Length: 170
Image (tube, rainbow, N blue to C red; front, side):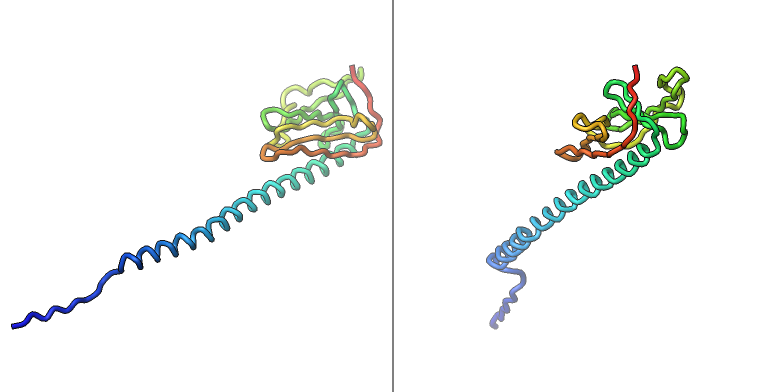
């Protein structure tokens, strides 16, 4: 009686496993940099879109506010522009805790600006490292808005020609 043994080959050899792992590694070395590049480009694009949107919004808003203002008031380096909603109110903008805040003032009969009291402070825009609005030192016909967003390395300047009278306050 003879024993017939049939060998069946199931599984893979060590060389086949190593080649499969090398192929998978090669595919990942080609794909992962593409994923990183796509992620990096998307983040850069997002920052650029936000910057463009903020600059467009601020330019349009401040142009409208400046054009609606009869007189621009200045107290030191602070600028007061007529409020768009209430004609006898004036707004001053300042950076506070990464937010641009709007402070409302009313012009008194003696020509001074005083806070309207309760409800005088509101949030204008968020996500800023720096923000200021002032008269351009080189040419007083222009107001200059300077700002830097949180997710950016460089600042921006917006020049708006106003053609308005600037009155200094005590």
